[in-house]
Image (cartoon, rainbow, N blue to C red; front, side, top):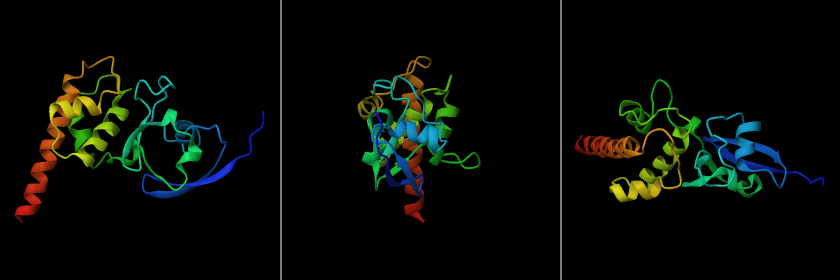
Length: 167
């Protein structure tokens, strides 16, 4: 069956982009195959593993469960939009420093879920972190180091905010 495509406009990692999309094309497919942003991983394809997590209009979502067409006018942030090699995001730093990265497959989704959490709740409790990451599966780390990395990132962000306020 042939479907007509439509043109959508999204803000992708801070830059306005336009794509002709098929009505059945997922945001994950658009990001990986046409925007060439392969940090967003294809895992289960069912919204169960969290490997494809991106931030859509400020909320962490499984990009495999969102049609690209639904994103017209939206802001989409992928792992490629978080930090740089020269200036990594605090979550990227704490994940690396505390050993929360092992094979790395789940890491982009974990960081995106954690980033969305910290933007909504700068002082999360352990339960808040566990809830925010509950949709992200990891087969390597056992989650303790991931939880510690998110907590440490929150602590560092708070310390930096305090330092800015004291100036």
